[in-house]
Length: 198
Image 1 (tube, rainbow, N blue to C red):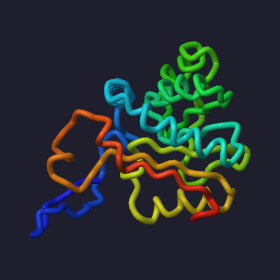
Image 2: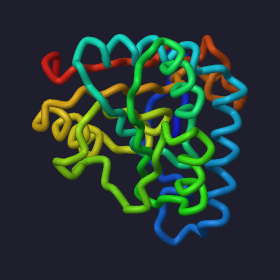
Image 3: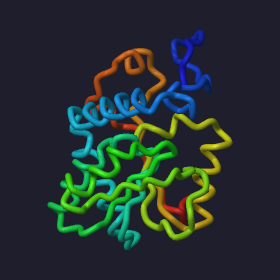
Image 4: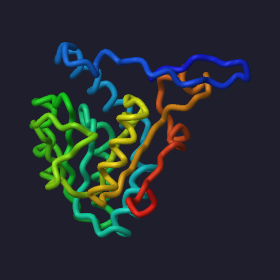
């Protein structure tokens, strides 16, 4: 997704493509990009904002697992897992991706003492297998989907009665789009949706 200025100073949404979303994109470059994004998430301390929201939805729904969609190099999940553990929540986390990075996924369990597992199976965020139940999370990835695909992601969660947490730091203000450094105050666009509210 990209933005173009309109007359009132706001930005309109243009659905373009991002190279690393393409099947032909070299895995070594995709891995480098997702590792850079993971490091930015850690730098942003975004987990301090996101974890309390996830804790609330986990306790409200009784979920025993988080299914992280479009995980890349794990995004903020490692820090979130640490925050949730400090609250006394014992919850499993499964990192998934359409183009899973085998090395990053395999390294998650040892790095997190088994709190996070990585799926080596290519998973379509618009149609998850029924056995993958739990809170579905998308961290700064929902904007990669056009309106129809985004709707299918939410419809699949609704059909399977699973909560969804969509956290985006993107904003349609030029200053935020131009700023590559993540900050805590950029995380205002994080919405946690329970299937009953869809």
